[in-house]
Length: 520
Image (cartoon, rainbow, N blue to C red; front, top):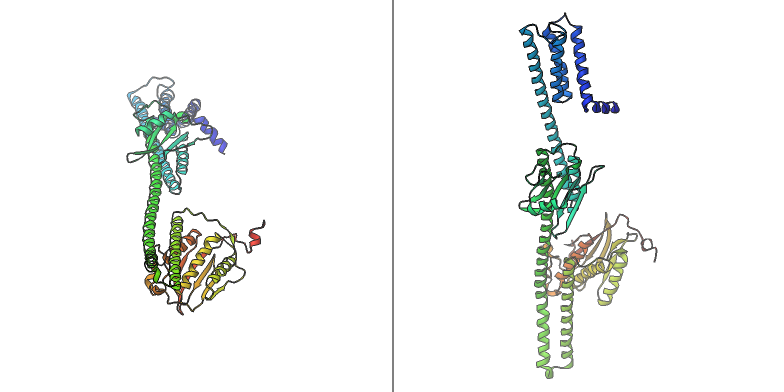
């Protein structure tokens, strides 16, 4: 069936095929008029010749319909109007009949041709609206300028069935070129023409005011007065003339592509501005934290040093050693504060790369507790880590630092007599690590700002305040966030505070270090 329809299209789309179709329809009409000759009036026979005119007007071209109308009138005159078999007309009523047949045929042919044009225009408009809708939807889902250029070039080439090219000038000055060609065609748009469009911001080529004789059409991708690219079509492969509505459709597609590029650049600029603002906030908070946390140790160091300088002869050995230990401890606290501030700045700026590997949380907890027990021999550190937990893909050094900061925070603020408990369990697709103490707990205001960069020691714990705790908790949050986890704190029902963080479990997580590292 498809082959038959294709053959029929070939016949009616050739000059000889259209002529044969017209003659065939006139032959059928003549046979019908001959069969009813003498049974109906001559006017009825004339109406029979209107059928080929209408059919050719609907299915063929307008000129074919007009030729059919003229030839049908000639056949009617020759075969049926007295005197028959001559081109003479016997009376004026027959002349009026022939002219009426021609007039009606011409009017019908014109109306049908006009209806065909309007129908084709409506279908073309509907199709182009669909093309714009599909292009807008596809452009809204991409996040790179090269993808926008590629999608735009393909959509333009598909819409006009001819080669298309898009050139996008990036913010850095580099140019992205995307070419889309229908099968069997190549894009031969002149580079100078595209460069002229980009530099002057005006359309060029067919149906434009600039070099309208060129076998191409190019328009700027423009947002306001900013030309960010060029889109052009090669008209050498176009099977029909380039029309003004084609140019309008190309301009509409160009506006969509330009808007998508502009949206992407605005989003990128917003992200950059947010990052700059975040970095400014980080810097200001770091300066505030450092100035606050360094003021006290500096004052203590200056006081101890001045005491040693001014009253050295009056001090005994024990008092002198105590002042030196004070200077040493406060200097170490200042060094810790500076290290924490530097690491937080690197984490916030994204400069610290994670060295992920498959690690056992049990091993990380064990190594941290072993180190802290040597530094705090009089404190109880209790760990509850169930067996069979899957490995997590983390940076072991950074996660150990998070756990160390939380445990040291609990040792400092959790009271001198109570134990510090470390619990690990699985919660869905994450491993949760919790550090709990038996101290005075956290204030309501502390819970909201506890992990902020400028946060200081929680209220109610000032008598055991450890300088730099705010920076330490902020570092914990930055490290956990870099691993895709979450961190938080809450008061325990029985008294004390509880700090927790989670680490995501990968879908392909293994159960043992040997499985994760077969080469070791």
